[in-house]
Image (tube, rainbow over all chains, first blue to last red; front, side):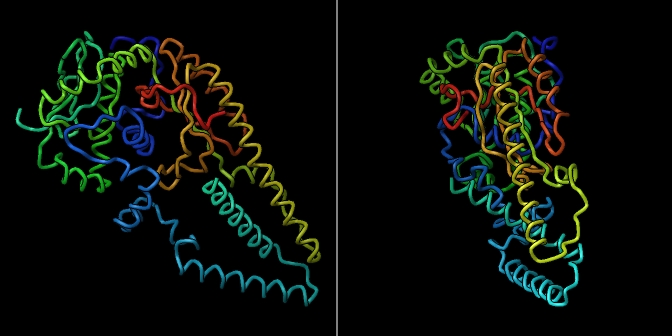
Amino acid sequence: MTYPSRVPEPYGQSGSSANLADILERVLDKGIVIAGDIRINLLDIELLTIKLRLIVASVDKAKEMGIDWWESDPALSSRARRDELTRENAELRARLTELEEGRPAGSSSVDRGRSRDEASLERGRTQQEESS
Amino acid sequence: MTGLRYVYAVCRPFGAALQAQLTGVAGAPPKLLSHHGLIAVLSEVPERDFSEEPLKAHLEDLDWLTATARAHQGVIDALTAVTTPLPLRLGTVFRDDSGVRVMMEAREDVFRRTLDRLEGRVEWGVKVYVDPESAADADERPPAKAASGRDYLRQRRMRTKSHEEMWQQAETFARRLHETLSGRAEDFRLHAPQNSALSGAAGRNVLNAAYLVPRRESEEFVEVVDRTKDDNPGLRVELTGPWAAYSFTEERQGNEEGA
């Protein structure tokens, strides 16, 4: 090695065991673009589309990697959409009953309310970012 | 050689030897092709996998893509230890050595200019993640029971507000960190935040930046990043590198959508 003394030890393993997303981001999206004799278009596999391609190409593979967010995302799954409506409906009914009976709300229903708020805020953010 | 030529990088001649066991994308060891005072680092790859149609098909195969990307990066990493390589994008393939030579002649000026600009520099990746769960836990008071519908709504509003404050805090932190680090770097690029489903990292990625830093100043740069790490609950700073200057091969200063 020519310059080992001044360069710190690798962080986050830039070598063979680095985060796949970090590596793909660089080797597919950065670096010098030269049209070789073999013509391929890496735009076809831009990083942003990889996760979607994963889903289309291989749902099992994606699940194996723990990528299953589309199953619970109402924008992508009709089942999740139905589930969400059903849950929301049930919560509203429960809430209404509590109010009508004049009982203080149980903390558990407040918690459910919170997590749904956060989830919808999260989606709002994402949509905002994507549209900007 | 009868296969195709997969080119990893272009660099200036260097004295040191590459690791003896180093292998490239299809298992063959990388070779150096010298032309007009520059070196192309390439390895032989089989036509059955790297001609147009099979290559396109392979790129849709995540396992193949993963192995190829890691092998590509492995060669670039080995080169970074001994010289300053200009990394080429994955899948740059020529029919034979003479095709590579023609390419090197056509781009000689750009290669030399870019090599001059990047000589002795490395890239450091810095990412900031927000973990909404742990940030909320840090200042969470046990929620009081809502005594009325109005009370319930008020509590909801407060929670939404603290959630917004957390994001604001995260953005301020990321902006300040970026200001500090870009002051210590020769150049920077702001990349799109990584999707956590793809990276497998916990939390939400709010800053994904690359900094171009001279090797001899790298130690200092790393220390600056390290010092910021423990400041904020719910925020995580992740440093990767040193990488070859992947993000800086184009001749563009700063970042168009940057600070």
